[in-house]
Amino acid sequence: MSAVVIRTRLAFIGGLTFFLVVLSALLWGLWLLVIWMTAANQVPVNSLMIQGEQHYLSREEVRQSVLALPEVGNFFTLEVDRVQQQLQSLPWVYQASVRKQWPDILRLYIVEQPVAAQWNQDAMVNTHGEIFRTRHEDPELVSLSGPDEESNRVLEEYRSAQKLLQPRGYRIERVHLTPRRSWELTLSDGVTLLLGREDLGARLQRFIDVYPGIAEQERVAYLDLRYDTGLAVGWKQDEETDNDKKRGTKSDRRA
Image (cartoon, rainbow, N blue to C red; front, side, top):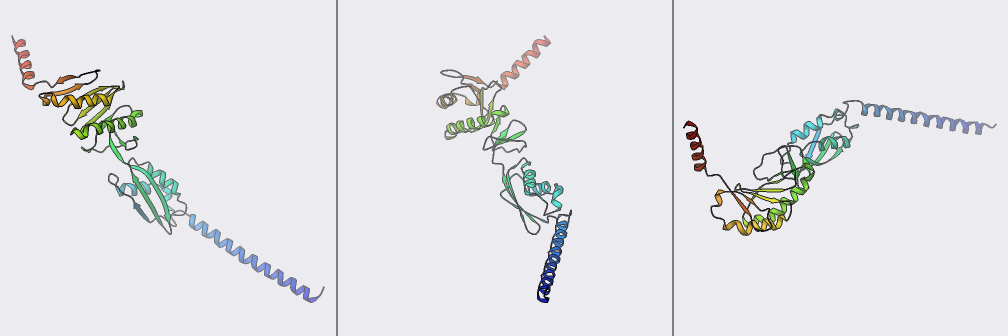
């Protein structure tokens, strides 16, 4: 074998060895970097950027919800889907999107529940007819109630009734769907409309046509519109008459 061939092979072997050494060093360094990056609390999330309009949800509530996750101690291993699920478990959060930004920032975009009304005694309903479990007292919000599975239907009936009554100056305070699926509607002046199960639009129109002609409207307690034609009026009990009856009853007992 000639000296030239031997030198060529030695050069090739030397070059290959150098390449393998460099490659091994790079892989080892990369492995150490991965270990460092995935070690707990090496690179924690240090900043939360919260975007979106919040009227009912506080930024501190969002912050505490994220910090409650043990994974938040490591920016690299933190999964954005896990943060998103955590945020969407908050009652007032309708949607949430999460994005990580190098080196240690978590960007959150929050879409708050588009609240439409109060629901029963312990919840709210959004504009899509979906119930979410929280309470917020707001006199401007209508109170809706009924079976939970009918929340969307109750909201739609409220909207339909509002279109009829609001232009005439009537404000709806409460809409209730009974367990027997009968409708009751209460106006802001305290008058309750008993509407039954069917023909709600026609019965509301009858109320609009007849009610202005009823004398002493301040004494009306309810209007029963569950008739094919006409309506029945329930009157508030007169306070003086009620007191007289009570005094009379006491007098009779003394006698």
